[in-house]
Structures are given as C-alpha cells and as structure tokens.
Image (cartoon, rainbow, N blue to C red; front, side, top):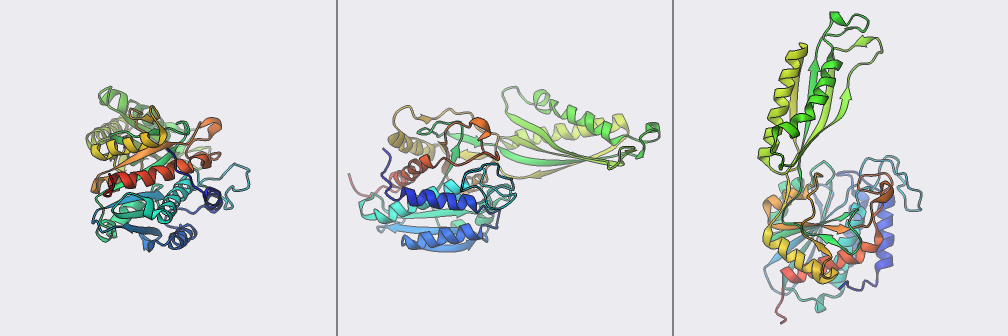
Length: 391
C-alpha cells in the first residue's frame, strides 16, 4: 500500500525546480546545494563534496550496526528541451531528459518521510541516502567509490531505482541477474590517400572504405555470436572530408558496443578488428580501431532482488511486479556499486512513452504521479532489510 505523503505538493514543486535548472555531470552545484540543505532541514547528518558534487545523507535509528545505501542520480543531459510547460529547462542545451530530477525528489521525499516518522518505522540500523553526480557517461559512481564511499559509509547492500516509460504507473520491474548492458565505445580511423574527386584512381578512397565498413559491422552480431546471445553494435558518427571535390586522406567512424558479459564484448571486439583488417586490405587503406570500455553490466544479486520483489508487491499489489522483463541495452553506472556490494536496481513505471516521451528524448518529462510510489518503496525497503524487533 502506498504511504500517505502530506508534503507531496512541496516535493513536486522541488522536482520541477530541479527540472528547470538542469546541471551536467560533475557540475550539479545548485542541485547538490538544494539536496544538502533539505537533508539538513530534515535533521539528517550531511556529507558533501563526495566525488566533487555528491551528497550523502545519514539517518540512524536504534543501536544496530547494519546499514544500507539508497541511491539517486542528479545530473542532466546535454540536450535541447522541446517542451513548453512552465517548468521547462531555463538553460539552453541542457535538459533533465532521463528523470534524474524525479529520482532526486523521490529520495529526498523518502528521507523526509523517514525522519518525520522515525519513531513509527520498524528498522534498526543506518540508512545512507546517496545523491550521486555524473551518471550520464561520466562514471560518477566509480568516482564515489574511488574516493572511499564504502569505507567512509560502510553498508552491506546498495539499491537503485529508475523511472521507466513504457511500464504503466503502478507497476514495477524487478529482475534478477543482468538488467542493464555494459557499454564500450569504439573509434575507427580509416587512412588512405587523398586526391581530386574527378580522378579517384589516383588515390585510396577512405569514404568508400568507410561505407563498406559500416555495412560490414552490421554482421558482427548476427554472424559471430550465438543467436541467443544479446549484443548491439551501432555506428553513430562518420566524419570525413571538407570539400565537395576532394577525396579526403582520412575518415573517422565512432559508435557503441552493448552486451551483458565480458566474453560477448571480447568476441565483438575481435570481430570488429578482423573486419577492419579485411576491409583495409580490400581497399588498400590503413584502418586502426580503438576501444574505450565504459560501464560494466548492471547485475542484480539474487537474494536482494527477491527481497525487493516482495517489498514492491506489498506496495503495488499482486500481478503488478514484472520479474521477466527484457533487460535493457542501455547502460547504467550503478553497475559499479553492484560490483562492490550486493543489491538491486529496479524500474518504476512512468507511464506510456508515447509521442516520443521516452528517456533521452527532448519531449520527455518525469511523471510526478509516481513520486509517492517511489517514496513508499524506499521506506518499506529499509524496513524489510533493516528489520527491527517488532513481531
């Protein structure tokens, strides 16, 4: 059952204020100040400056030594918002297009509710409210770990939540094992011999070689992996040439690889290397590839996932928790936390993703109606993990 949240209007206003003032990775100064100020107002101990702009709120009840972490991300995306409502982004080229404004508000709401109802809650131990910077591509979770997050704030498990367009409001996905993919970017440099476009026989055409390579890369997954193994290879950039009558010396292709385990990723990389070698030999070009390993897969631990499933079912009701949802090829740096500690990362339904209102879309907005659901989930999860002495 959803908890009554008497301060919900105040929380919605706060969420929309954060949405209107988006800040990019490691630049979340205004947002971090708001979070720290609110946590202090609720009576929590507050630690700031963790991985530059990260904030930790500490709430303790009883004398127990057990502790868990709850995480929300705070950063926005470098995207121009195309909405026209009053709380749209006030900053050109920056937008909360992934709902981190809602995640921040939800976790603040949970901290406030728990602080105001501490005597009525059944848990014994410490809750660390982790407000993380730089989830979008910059690895803020890894930075927090490197700065001693788990040594300074020792916790037995860590939990994350993300809103999910396409899942109805009032439903949640809680899946064991891999839930989000690992990601690796690649850059391929094609070097040939520039020449006049009217005399292509005098050169080595890097753009023809690049075009052939783009098509060949589409066979990496379909012809090198087991049909039941999931992976994605996408070319997202092609750069080459500056004039309409010049075949350029060089061209550059960039893109991303997604998969759920290291073996798959390595097989994909080896296939790309073979294709680069073969296409280079075919056209007489020199082709070099560089891989940049980014986020690892996000893998939920089994015991914590089952606990989260029970908590979610108790709030949402029978049949409202999806346990066999297809994992996402999107990546999430919460994966770094789950490599260090057991835990679970869940998806909370944000409603239909119609009209382009999906994650990372310029028309997206977080659904304020799910704030009480997220707050209730966090509060009941703390009670479930750090159960006190009540029967």
